Length: 55
Image (tube, rainbow, N blue to C red):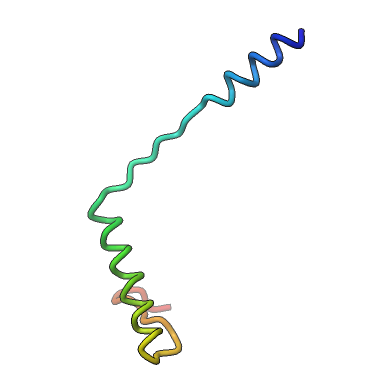
């Protein structure tokens, strides 16, 4: 009984979820974050709002 339970737990622990992130989208997001950080370091107190994303 214990062996079957341990085998079940081991098998359930081997599940992997692969998520594909498009390289271009990830690069754009990284560039946007870097730009916002530089703007904060250069004296701006609030991050810039990207075009088309007005609150």
